[in-house]
Length: 167
Ligand SMILES: CC(C)(COP(=O)(O)OP(=O)(O)OC[C@H]1O[C@@H](n2cnc3c(N)ncnc32)[C@H](O)[C@@H]1OP(=O)(O)O)[C@@H](O)C(=O)NCCC(=O)NCCS
Image (tube, rainbow, N blue to C red; front, side, top):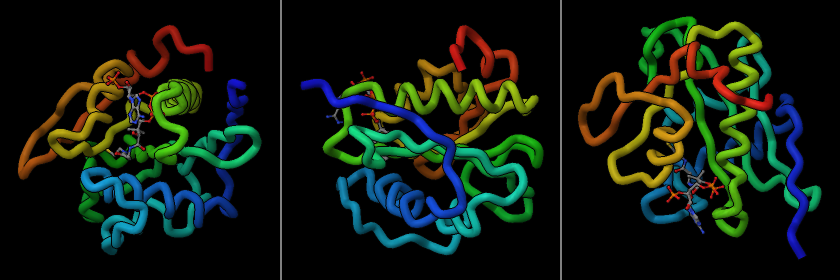
């Protein structure tokens, strides 16, 4: 039986789930769900729901299976994937047992469409070298802005946010 996939907007009560997803992103190399989060990591989820935040939760047969969300940061906050203060930074993860079914592709597509509707000038992110998520970003229209220290900052410019997205 194919599980049913649904999306809903992320809300402040989702902070614990988003934190769990952030651990998967931080621990992608080992597949650990228990990765320690640095203060810099926690900045992506703390107090989720502030102005400028947006996110989607993927539900697999009604249970949260993944999430993609973004948040605005100022340059002096020193986040990993900052390109401009008006370009939100994206984070994404899917529970291991739900991977390989297109959930991340769907989340990314719908969140970028939402960013286009909100009139964002782009969306950025940071991805470590070797992370298979990189292919997902390439396909979605992200391009490398800078690469250093084993990671790349990528951005999806406004013109590509809206392309052929069902939203
Ligand atoms: C990256 C990630 C979000 C992809 O989620 P997903 O729902 O499996 O993605 P999709 O099904 O839309 O497919 C995306 C890719 O995963 C591949 N994939 C297929 N089966 C997979 C599986 N069982 N496990 C992992 N990836 C799989 C797909 O083939 C596709 O990549 P490719 O065809 O270019 O190789 C997920 O692997 C994840 O949560 N990783 C850990 C968190 C992370 O690294 N986040 C990004 C930090 S920058």
